[in-house]
Length: 361
Image (cartoon, rainbow, N blue to C red):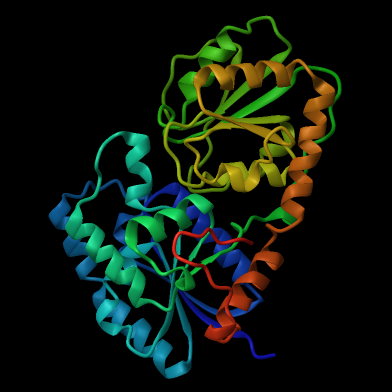
């Protein structure tokens, strides 16, 4: 079988996007003829320069020459162009004629508005994004939440929408040991400490002084912490997966997230999971009451945490289920097979979605 020819255009504007970019590249390696390009790389998180709206727009316009060459090459060589998020597809719009193209999307602006309680988009932006979403061959998403927003908020026809699992390095991740004695080891990962809810977790921990619990925070935020809280200052551009094996429970009381990559990485390592319903991708990984909890309030999160650390047998069952869950469909090979089936299939044989319907794996 001839290898798929894919031109992947990534958009590494934050650490979550960088992790997703790296997981996609690892998934495609040795499975596809892949060429990788970055769109507007001057905005990557390793650059400390601050952008104004105008300078950001100009930086992206300067990338259009590259995008034109990528699309011309794809048209000439029969390559499929895959864009990470809408922005690189938007600036490629004049060059997409005759090119098979897909947008990879784990969030939309409209998806965040109910969480933030404010408008972060407007009619012209929504119209423009809708135009781009309908101009590509298809849109590939990773969550029911994003799929629903794309159909209902942007009018994307269901037949253009596909859902795949988020790819994680399931079989390249060290697995947490079964620990039925000793303190429960809790890990938090969040470069943006307060948005990720690190302060919420600290409040819970402070209320459990003397309990057999150890807390480690992986963050770059400078904090005045109690002496019994450990901190890991890792490079936020690198995956945290090498650390997970030393812990039992991953907690992320986030206030706003699309699909926190650390949740999938923690599950791959076989950790129990507790997060909030503001982590919109969490239900893809967490089977409620089986390998973790998705809390809708701070009080509920506290109750779930307290009950879980008090029951080691249940905690170990949660850990085992996390690992089993990820093995069943989130590995690089499994996700690539799903992706290839979407790209290879004749459009008329694609699974169809009626407007308003949710895609299934």
